[in-house]
Amino acid sequence: MRKKIVAGNWKMNNSLNRGIELAAEINKMVRKQDDHDVTVVLSPPYIHLADVARIVDKDAVAVAAQNCASEPKGAYTGEISVKMIKSTGAEYIIIGHSERRTYYHEDHGLLKQKVKLTLENSLIPIFCCGEHLNEREANNHFEVVKQQLTDSLFDLPAHEFGKVVVAYEPVWAIGTGVTASSEQAQEMHAYIRSIIADKYGDEVAENTSILYGGSCKPSNAKELFGNKDVDGGLIGGASLEASDFFAIINSF
Ligand code: PGA
Image (cartoon, rainbow, N blue to C red):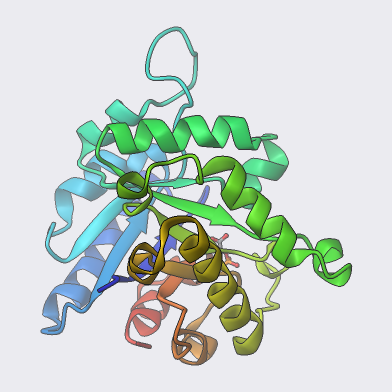
């Protein structure tokens, strides 16, 4: 059975103190709940990771880094390695977010290396894919997403791919307030699952969690998560307020 996951991507927001406070608020809300059906993940900036991982209850809230270095160690000023991330207690790493692809020119070869290092260190990649608006308008969205998955993930053997979480994030929906419709999300998620099945077989495809990201908020989460192939969300803006984020978690 695949996991339902709601992950909050704080991006470059919150001072360390506010981050710790927010993590504690969310942890408290999640802990109180009896039903732990949904895996809750917080993805704060690097400098918050160790503190956030320390204050949350491991069985209630997991922690993710937003990025990692593509090299294992050494003279790479300003970079943070997967091993360092692991040493904080984080269990997941977001890889290939469209903001990394666009602003920092991360290409598929680099992302492939990051995925490999993440898996080698027994952490879980949350691999982001998604098309730009012009690509959707040109009806190329399926092809674009297929290429992203093929280039960075489909070299993995099945037992390694089986550990990956996929996040479909149409770039035109990220931070814009425009959400993919429930039909658009389901259509793409079903397509992603079908290409995973073509490559790795039905069992791996059925066990892969595919999250939706892009202006997901309390008012639309229920409809999005109600789709058969939408296994949760990667939440940006709405993860910065504990009550909004908790409402999204409870939308399942
Ligand atoms: P958003 O961001 O929810 O603010 O649109 C989602 C993401 O980039 O992961």
